[in-house]
Image (cartoon, rainbow, N blue to C red; front, side, top):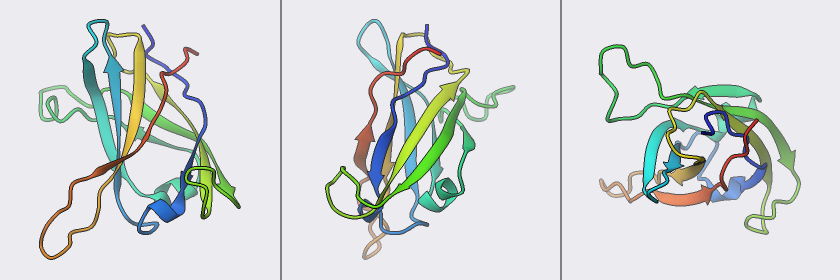
Length: 142
């Protein structure tokens, strides 16, 4: 069981986001032994929140929210953020290198990973579908 994974650092391009205040979702999943990806929890944040350095986000599972005694399904921890002059993903624009881990995940499988989903702004009274920006590899045990 890997309830406290450390993920490899990754880069994000700030030009891929509309602005520092544009929300995006980070969702943490568990690859169960049966091959099904199970949502552990998720949170919504912005680049502005991240640029101030280390922070912790509670992972909330929407199907458990509101249950008596439920607070979270673990935590996603931004350990460090380093501004980059050039970002390799994609190869243009400025970016940030992110180092993160998770803590106390409600994980039954052995391979937790996370995804970053960009939530586009409403355009002409329509909400475009979110798009997948990044998918991590599986976390390494502490």
